[in-house]
Image (cartoon, rainbow, N blue to C red; front, side, top):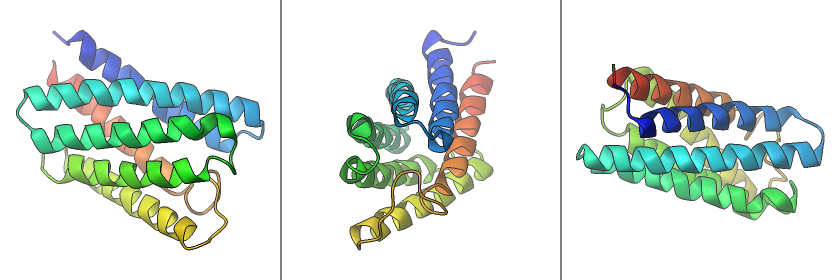
Length: 170
């Protein structure tokens, strides 16, 4: 039987992935901030539950990776209401922590290789985006090709995590 916390984590990742990606493409600032706030809360809840799950399983590196990802998401969440331009400092820190968390979660073979690869690609794209912003590039969270190119890989990683969490309880 699937645990309630696994179900909630899967729902949180699904909401986070869907609304996060949707928020990237909407033109209304208020709607984007609302979608990203709901997305951020859902991902923080999911990452907290996954941290506890993998720590209980004795997989401390994966647990620490989810905790690091949670910290990044909380930082992103803190900048949402400021608007795109004003949120950039929080955004840089948040995606840097996302990248570190993704690498930590994927460093071991806890998840399938394809998930680890999508996480790694996403992490590389987020590190490149953060570095570009730090070096003066006028990038916003919605800029294309970077950082926007990282989001689909992140959502694919979320889909893999959801599949793994739900599959493991069958």
